[in-house]
Length: 68
Image 1 (tube, rainbow, N blue to C red):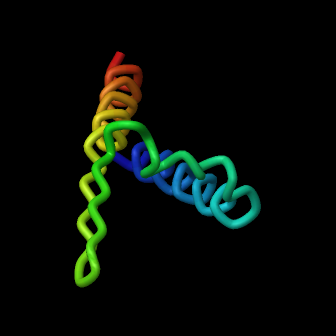
Image 2: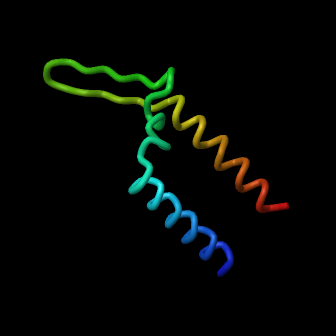
């Protein structure tokens, strides 16, 4: 359990550093084809369908890698 917490903490630090010093690395996030963005005069609706599918596949691969 402690190993997972250490790995999760390190990943959070790396993501934070990437967002702070290299924001262009994650510029694609939320702007993939298939993400639905509807904007009218009075409202904005955003459904990141494709982005969430990519995130789900990546997390599934990472979890299956660590389980072996």
